[in-house]
Image 1 (tube, one colour):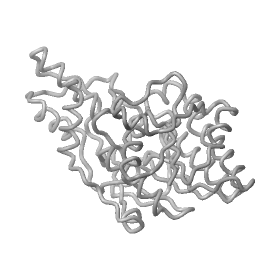
Image 2: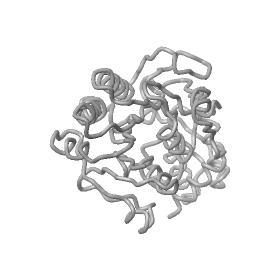
Image 3: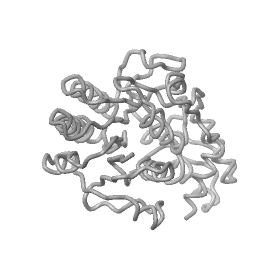
Length: 316
């Protein structure tokens, strides 16, 4: 199968390219001009990919990439940082919502013209649910985004669904719950905490500045998340929405403690108001029963292994 991956040099994108190649697929990797290819990929892996340049806010660029014949598309490209989206909500909407509308619009035109009919997996986020429930969320739960990032991703979902209804594009939406692992940068909570703990070790300090450690999150390994995307490419049902989740919640305070134990520091967290996210979701845990039933997917990595691999990767 020939699979187009947008955002192929992002955190999840690089892992997805590797997983698709390992599964025997031909991969077209769409990346933003001027950005380096994922250094985690080997020279052989990079050479096995057909690379294409993609600017989601440039119609001609999107048209050129969408015209590449493929059996499936996994759309990961977008603004992934909640902090960056908060600083510039308009940019989040431009890239995440409008960019998705533009890409799927071109793919829909290709389908209507009879030139291609790919299955399209749009990667969304569990943050669209908001934080009202205190139980594992299911796909039929209402959405209530409470951040520019979540709102822009819900906008991307709506744009994708409208396009699919109008053009017959075969669409699958995957709402991924928080994920981390080796290679994630410090804009995200687990690598940010790990980095601060490492600095504390070097400085001989015990006090570590943190944001709010009360929220509960359903943390997945990025390698499990991309395995879910690969499974959906093979067995996802068009028109359906799937949670990608472990079903287990972990308080950020526990995440901090686990990372401190792995790094080997007896750390004391100290709240820093500048690190607290406004409108932080207090509880975000998902039920992936629908995904398991459709694809037999299950997480393969424990949180302990994920955190150890993340810490080891930061050492280089």
